[in-house]
Image (cartoon, rainbow, N blue to C red):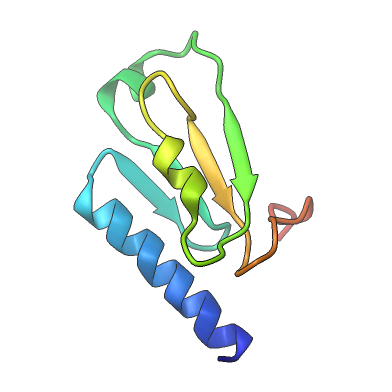
Length: 89
């Protein structure tokens, strides 16, 4: 498999995850899954906690996004963590 097809498969997985559960948003350009529930949008006093990790076979860190857990997860490309310049685009 080449890199472009791996990246497309990862994006498809993340889009499917967010389509299945409307409490999440996926920012395709940055590979970020973020909470979108009412509690998160209304509570500006909470601490925002973000985790990053490689896409791998499954971007496991997105499973920890939710109320009382992570606010967002940043997914790197397949088998690589997100770079620090991910948001500099």
